[in-house]
Length: 408
Image (tube, rainbow, N blue to C red):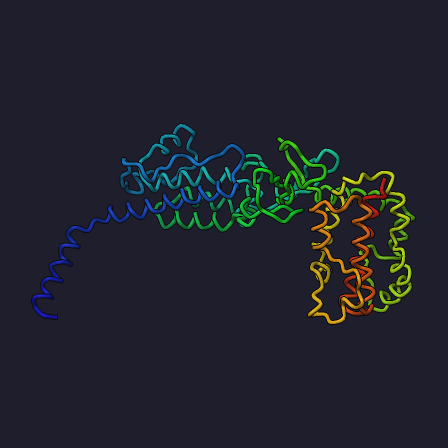
């Protein structure tokens, strides 16, 4: 460098050292940490992860009276054991770091426990009453930390936050809480189980057990008013009814012997499944196994009540062996399919017919569901992967149909 430029650089560096103040940069860092807490509060509210009737407090980062204080003067350390009056005095402090810690301490207990996951929250089973059945919930809803057991991870997190003396420590606590939130359960990402759409949030009910959604107008019968208390989706109610029914049936010695001879999950060995399918092939492809069942259900099922059909379809779609039947068969990828199968059917087509109201009775739904498996038997080999999947799905459908429509 030239002597003149070198002298200028030295002069600038000297001026920077003279004007540089540690308090100024620490204050800006603390203010940035406070803004991160406020941003997290907004995200929690936007995702509807907070408890009922809680809202974000007024913004503190835009206040004009904020000042820098030494950590000891700010009173960030050793807040444990403080009574409510002393804590309220701390909330009035005008230090960004203290405000950030205080706001984060107030945010955490106002997050629904069901949306917290490990290590800050250990889920434990809670039983909630649906009116007719009891459903097991993976996380208790609307329960504060005073009402429930605090996990070791949450206890350590709170203690660390209480002893925070720098913006770096506060940011670390923010990240830990942010990573422990189940953002995937946000109401912004929830879609209706029936129509598969996420629009019309004002009509979208969230199940208090599985956090899945259903539009009030998609349910059968439709719900006119939003329930005040807990609400459980048809799938959770049906599963709870199924568990209670299975427990009652397991006490019957005849049913228990029958299950021992034929496993209830429908999973047979390869040779056993092939023999069983060959014995039933003719009977399944003619009138179908549900003909006698339809006669018994026609008297007590109204044509407009297809809620149970929607539940059965949703359960079939989520089954591990439903993959060959979720979408229509592409004739370009499967040559000769349309030549052999004159009336193709799949789960997506069934769902579209349910949504558009093309089914006038539950029996019409059962006919299309049986058609899916009959087509599978006609086109696929018994011991093929798709053939085995069709056999398992048929048994699953028949068992669910019998449990819904023929259990008194």
